[in-house]
Length: 388
Ligand code: SF4
Image (tube, rainbow, N blue to C red):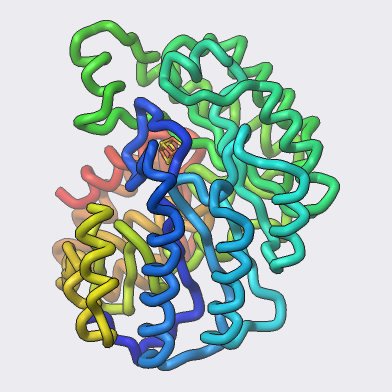
């Protein structure tokens, strides 16, 4: 059971509705279910209120509305949501409140309403500007939608972030260079660059398996990633995590909660929570989610929502510390390695780090070790090698 007396200062709210289902999507996302929006919203606020009645509360520092496509949250319902949040929680002086936005789902009125509600940061799913490639992946947004959205949003929001996907099928090297160079002219403070991942049971997975879709080679992706990291740095976007780049002072505070393994509470279908010792994930099926929440009258009854409830063992904690530490620019401290590993394990670990330093994947000083840009492109392989 989620330890509600833990020190939660960050909330995640999941909005699963999308205008279409992208062929690469691994998220808890529903197309053609908009008629459930109001009922889902009622369930969300019930979950939040029941948690609020029960939990130890300290001022909230970050809230992230993720999805799905939270920019389809009807403005009158979002206003209601903020009313509930304000009644339920205290807020820290300058909370970071982020909303994920997809081009083609936004009007100037919506953007102004978000600003008035207190949202501070928009995270825009650009992914690519190639209309044909996006359409082939069932993502019905156009390059013009992106440019129009950036124009509208920049008039209201200081902090705009964009997401790009590196390695989409059909995007040439030259096209990627042009996308990054164009993005450097946009009014953004933050970029996330994700490698395309082919998730099982997605249309993309079957297209690749049947050889109907060809993906770029790993070497081509690594070369583009290195070029991207270098180019972004030259434009003042400093890499602070494997996939994230920001102008100084505009790093995502919410994401750093995940990377630092601090507690957070998630609400909604498929939402994850962490209380410092255990990880939880809620029901991913809409009807099951609604049925449990609508019948619940206490935080205890909401426990039935958990489809994952796992107290981490010491070795799982070490794995998380290693993975999350290496994802971040500052890396991991040698002290943590000394605390975690026996002398024999440490010798083996340090020998492997030495090999990675020779290969140019890792760098270090007296207190810390971290991945180089080359190492960040193959982070998973390095973690696996360090653990065996
Ligand atoms: S918009 Fe995002 S969440 Fe929705 S289907 Fe596409 S990738 Fe998934």
